[in-house]
Amino acid sequence: MLLRVATGVGLGTVIGIERQYRSRRAGLRTNALVAVGSTLFVLLSAHGFGPGSVGTPDPTRVAAQIVSGIGFLGGGVILRDGFSVRGLNTAATLWCTAAVGALAGAGLYSTAVVGTAAVVVVNVLLRLFARQIDRFPASEQAESEDPAVIYEVVAVVKTKAAVRVRAQLLQTLGRSDFQLISMTSTETDHDGLVEVRAEFSAEHREDRQLEVVTTPLGLEPSVSSVRWGVRPENDEHEEQK
Image (tube, rainbow, N blue to C red; front, side, top):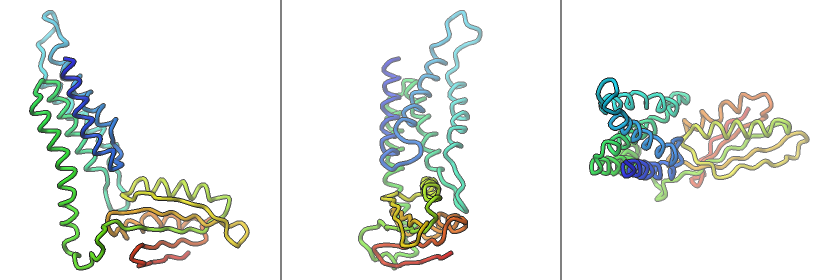
């Protein structure tokens, strides 16, 4: 049984490393816990009832409950952001991690290892393939060898609201695919106003998603102006309040 638990933890950790590397909501610990939890539930169903227990052990019943129960956990990482829905891939990965843990708990080690490899391959290789498919219609616009795009958001806000605006911007970026690089606050030449500057990266152009991030800032009464730009292309678009 210890071998099965160790296998569940190990394989869940392998999946979690890839998720943690990409800064997903469900990372290393979450995937490892999902895998070991599924392993323990299957072990309980298969070996936790003695001869005098009512009924007979049936691991398949617990496995079925794992499939439905993991849906609640997956629902917690699926978020609607504007017109887009995020977290579907993370939820699907958790679902697959639960399956790997159940296989380990059932003693199907080779199948569990193959399943783990399949999950990692899908998340890594198919992700690159999907990115190429997304770029195909606009391939003539892909001039840069480096696919990373650096965005910059600059907001001029009242000094007393600077902390709240920074927190709001961080929260909004946390629900997106952007990766924060830096965030600074600098006093302006006007009394009572502070310039909040945030720099973050994206794998490709995400102008529409950036509008979702900056629009709420422009509606804040304490925000004097908001502008954002794209680098290194120096293709800048500005929105003034």
